[in-house]
Image 1 (tube, rainbow, N blue to C red):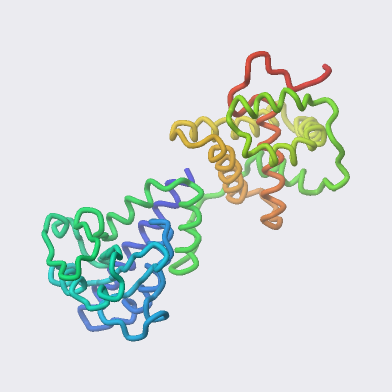
Image 2 (image 1 turned 90 degrees about the horizontal axis):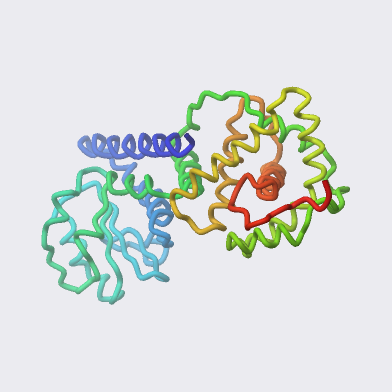
Length: 324
């Protein structure tokens, strides 16, 4: 599963970085600590949905405090020292007089913070701080990663890959999904007209029934390709009896997995697109095309699966075809 691959990669890279910072600190090599401030600013921002920046960009030579988000009123300390004294020293900094009402977060990048969370800390400037909720270490950050939606996990994986290391080492295999994308990507889709055989009233009924009005523009954009894709599926099936069925089954499987997490319907719809894109990108037989074209072709497949009753529930009496 992509979720497992993404998490395993992120876990490996963060723990490796933490271990290197710890070992290099013992021999007084502190360059990784400095570079890690900006890295963890982006990492924490993605995990906590904030916008942390290196505070020295805003206020030079700020001792003991590393990161700040003025919009969300957060101040953070990134440290390889994971002790009660270190946290209290940070909370005692005069900077909190300049930023009253700010939330303080402590990020331990080389150590286990479990024992610290049960402590009581001196907080002379009354910064907003909870030892239970505002002390992070690599383990607690990974727990946040584990519970991210697949789209956000992928974004985090791409960020960490760019910063820290190589791609996930996956064994790639041929997929029928990639094959149909290879076929569809060669078509001139700008010449496609509406598909007269589909019933727009019935499709609208299904959109409303599944609370997908926010997705309607996407469905309207891509439902016009129903006839063209149907034509390509028929050509594809000449290579094997279950080719198109297997493609539709992948999208059905993605839908069934996503509904377990009780996401909003629109999130499920776009997550199916994202997940199918990743399956194709990791297929051995995928002929690479620009990402925008790949996403467009996959959107055509997913909208078609929606119309064909493969994903989302059908209202009573749903019949998407005008004539048979």
